[in-house]
Image 1 (cartoon, rainbow, N blue to C red):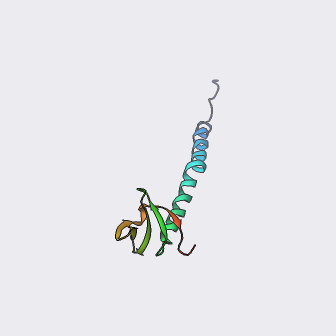
Image 2: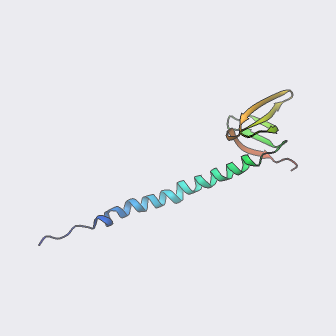
Image 3: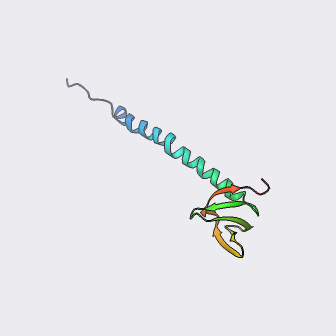
Length: 94
């Protein structure tokens, strides 16, 4: 009689363990960050101060469905996609 090797299920255990570690260290925090960014973008209002992913600082002049119009300087306005807003510098009224 020959000795049996380790169970095939037991050999998959390290892969499952690695996936669980990746999920809790990478995937879950990234999803939370995406939800937080989406909530911030959906909550944009007129006069909020923002910074774009390109580094432009500006003030929101108007909010549309997928874009916002941002005042960058006196008499300089630009329409940018909402998903290009990196973060909110100052909320209106604060």
